[in-house]
Structures are given as C-alpha cells and as structure tokens.
Length: 435
Image (cartoon, rainbow, N blue to C red; front, side, top):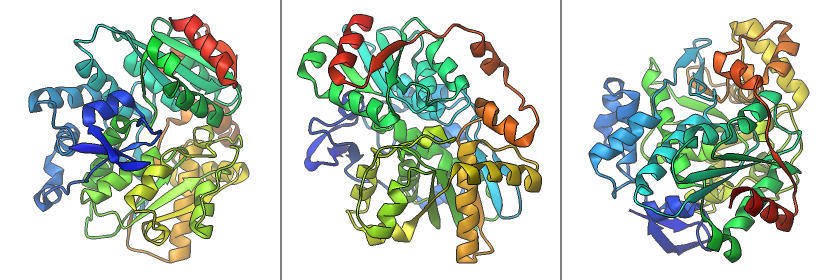
C-alpha cells in the first residue's frame, strides 16, 4: 500500500518510507491511499479475538512489507497490556488506556513504533535520532519505548513549567540514549521546532531523523486497535456506539476515524477539548483559525494548532458538513474540569484524571443536547489519575494511590537541557548534546 502527503496526493511512498520520514518532503502528513474495510465476519466474531489478534488483523491491511510472523511478534511486543472497558452506568463506560509502562495511552503507539523501527533499522549502520515534541505523556511513552534501543537516540522537547511534576520526572530521569530539552515556550513552539528540524538540510546531514509524535503514521495505526477492543467489550452491540475522545493534537481521534472507516460502527465521535478550542470553533464557523495555546489543567491537550487536523480534513475531502455529521466538539474550562472530577467520583465512585474529565463533560452534554437514551458510550481515559495527583487529590481531598513505577521516578534526579524557542539556539543545543 502507498501513503500520500496531505499537501499533495501525488507525493507517495511506501509504509516503511512514511515511518522513517515521519513527515512528507513537502511538510504534509502521511495517509494511506485507501483504508480497506475489515470483513463483516470480523465484527460478528470480534469477541473471539484477543487484543493482539485484533491488532494483527488491522495492521496487516496497511503493512505489506513485513511477513506475518514478524508482524505478529511486533504487535505482541507492543500490545502487552490490557485496555479494559469499565462500566460506570448502563449508558456510560470508561476505556482505561493507562495500563502500560508509563500509565498513558501513548504507550500503545510509542511501543509499536519502537518495535517497528527496531525491525526496519536492524541492518542500518548510521544512528537514528527520534525527535519528539510533547505536552506531557507522549515524551515519557516514547522515552520508555526506545530506552536503551541500540542505534537510536531520542530528543524530547517539552514546554518548561507546563507539564505536571510527575510527567516531567518521567521525561527527564531515564538518561542513556534519552535526552530531554526543556523549551522556554509552549507545546506549539516545541512542535514547530521539530518540524523545522526535519526541513533543515544541514541537520539532516548530521542525523538520520524521524518523529515519534502522532504526526508519524506508525503512531496512529496501533491507536486504532483499542477502538475495536472497546467495541469488543460492549455488551449490547445493537445499540449506537458513541466515543468521547479527549483531544489535543487530534491523533487519538484520527485513529478512531481510521477504525470507523475500516468498518467499526461508531455512531458519533465527540472531540472533547479544553480552553484550546480551535476545533469546535472550526465546526461552528467552517473556518480553521489556529491560535496560541493556553495552559490548562488538562495539559496534554494544550494545543493551539493541532497537526492531525490536516489528516481529518483530508479523510473527509475538506467537506466541513461531512465532518459535522460524524464529529461533534465542545470545550470546557478548568473550573468545569474540577467539578467534573468531583461529579464522577460522587456519582460513579470512579477517580478520573483531568483529561478524562473533559471527555466526561463533552459526553454528558452530548447526551443532554441530543436526548439520546439507548446508547453505548465510551470515554477514553488517557492517563492514570496518579499522574495528576496534585490536581486530583486537591479536588477529592483524598490521596490517589500512586503506582510503584511512578513513585520510583519521582525520587530520581531531573536532567534536562534548557533552551529557548528560537530555532538556531535549539539546533545548536541539539548538536552539542547528541552528536
């Protein structure tokens, strides 16, 4: 299968090339030429499939240069933890995506990409540099996935003072082949620096580079696996299936759209956002107007110019009416987020993190506005609440249970390279640190 650039459909390459490039030569993002439908039999028998088997059935539709034995091995290595659908009520469930090593949904994509690159680069002599902009969870997931991988260095760019203490410790305490760059700016500045680096001929002569952000197609593909895994766990599949997706860079939502186009019967996607409301404004006005991101309690969603918007409009052939039919979107303040954490705990005895709380609010309002009753709803809970214990504990006046792998990283020494958001200064710091 060939993959095209969202900037030019004629600019195409193989899956391997798309993964290794990260971004197309013209600055566009890669999308498959077609999204094949899974056979109806697959959905009728989905409960018989393991999570790993689901992943294999999906991945083999897009990856034609890896034999089935190796592809199964890659998926089994990457998807080695569950994604349980936890029921809150007859209508609402939470898909827990935080059971991986860094307690965030990014573990699925990062571990898959790491296993894939390890396979593709096994005979390469030149070292590869993975460049990653992170608003929190992506960085730690990528760092964990690529930690001590031979022939691979990782540069993590994160906005100084704009990630949680726990997230920062996960980013900055591994060492060895993992390098953290603390940028004096916001996430959008980090993302811009990564994109500039990919189009810098002088830098590409020094490093063989690729990205592990959701701009890389290999990050999105495994994220589609758990949409099928969620549907598998739904008890009454005759009812409409609605998914609320906490959204920042919109990779998670795009992965859900992939699943839907492969045949997953999703009645409605809800793009839940915080004060960074570029997407709901687009749906209202029909005009995309990026803006500077603002800092919120749900920091992984603090994105003012989501990269994957390019993929969404390409999938819908730039038709905003079609997008409105399948995706609704609404934004919420920090105050509303805090109240939602309280509400979920009080009504359902469930501790939800700030990102999941935004997803809950968007879903609750969707149900009120539409009046729909008989429906299966899933909120994607993207991170363990302990990663945001300073927020959650304060709201609930109780101590969140801290998993051991988090407490261990909190005691380690932070090591980061501080840099400005100016590209020339960042480039100099990157070369001095890694080369």
